Length: 388
Image (cartoon, rainbow, N blue to C red; front, side):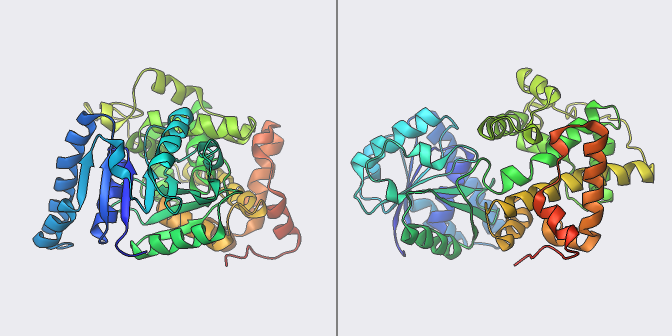
């Protein structure tokens, strides 16, 4: 799949980033957006990104110019005709995506692959109104696409196996780390990572610890690069809350994925985090309380959130959402976890993780804390998780 014509719809940060990656690897790229203002913003953003790469000696000035010239910025959807691969990266609204896919199908050949960059919507539903559903697939990049290695490749029940393999190979050729995920809510990362945010919020709402102490616990005890509240503010509470709400609904309101009232209020108040100057932290006036250094408290916070993360990883493996190897890759390459969760559980001892969950389940009496049958089986058999 060399020297392809790639089209990307949506000139926001994700779409522009994907377009830049494709052009960097030698493809002619059409970046489409129905809003000219978005294109006007995307063009200098791509140029700035390329200039930064030149400054860091990742690209030559000549290569940066070639990448820029390989991207066509357009508000005319007809310009995508002749594409070999179309990647949709527009707003996370299923009707908008469905309508766009139907329009695109009329403009491209039967051989063109139609991919969606959705982070939480069902891929099969996005392409459900298309005539040829064998070529529809999810290609979920992570922000920023230029820097993040992970791409979740999500075939549906209808996707041809050859399409899945060709997309996986193409992502590898683009220097990415592709993982294959089932078309289920949240795929791999946005499913397994939910407790990192949700359980941190629950601990806060129970007045066990404040934002800064919970963040400190996950960084100092767990070695995470960012604490959950720092990370939510970085991602944006508009995005993070909506993903949580979507996964919760699609999982038939399973209490493990229940959204937080605290985050809902921040979302309703448009306190999205860094991009608005205020979220869990006030970035305009950064005078937050200092975190507690109570070692027992910090350890208990980490143990609780870690147990919930491992439980999700075990459940995803049991439900064959992805292979053990791809689960480990997804969490280390997609959200920069210090270690794959299954290997990490093996290191700490699955029985300790199970004991933490059983204590929480008994204490709260909530299905939220039910241990995964696979975790219980591993402990009962006195084995470890297979990570490959």
